[in-house]
Length: 105
Length: 123
Length: 96
Image (cartoon, rainbow over all chains, first blue to last red):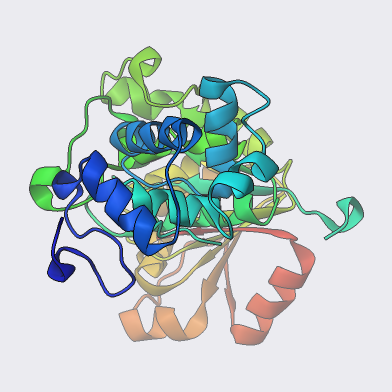
């Protein structure tokens, strides 16, 4: 359980390296979300994306990246919306311990 | 925005990745355009070819790595990337190792490319 | 065709890149430090004339820099002239 000062004022983790699956569950709980295997697929993908591209994806890139790695039926915004309601790129990044996507258009 | 009013835009990048904020600004412009479904293509000219240098790691400088961020552009459906062949040769670059798939162009071809767009944006 | 604006001296990469792209039918406006490329008898002004593009210089910038000895092919324009050019050329490329 990380204390409050490990997060910024919007609840994003300040240091990527503080992240572990327990922290993910902690952030998810604060968003009233219970993580399933389907969530974890996307979370691992988001972390891989960040390491590869040095940025958190905007929605468009996340959809395409999921399609490439999880198959076309999971590379759909409606599917991602069902897992991470509201703004999947933003909420998913948050739970994955990534900084807030700076291209949140 | 309807297809009829959609303008074609070429981003003309001309500066090295970390010497100024221009490379980052161009990247932001490309991503913002993609978010609004605007078609943008990129031309790396002169010292901007250095943005395509493989194995960049600017984390020791406390900055994001431009080369790795550029590698994400195809995920935003930005697929047409052109590069100044002479400048790449000047820096002895192996473009097959670049983070993006590019098409090398000579000076005359770069002019031909530029006149094919509605707008040019220089960075 | 392209309207180029150059705002950097002839020793800059901007100048070299600009010249490599300029072609007949294009226009170039020299402004800021770009005005030095118009100096008569210099390698730079010779290079510009060989591109066969139309060459213009911002009068105020040239005066400020003391660039009065202009190469023959370069025409002086003011802000109004620049606006007119931008109306003629849909595509503009700034070199700096």
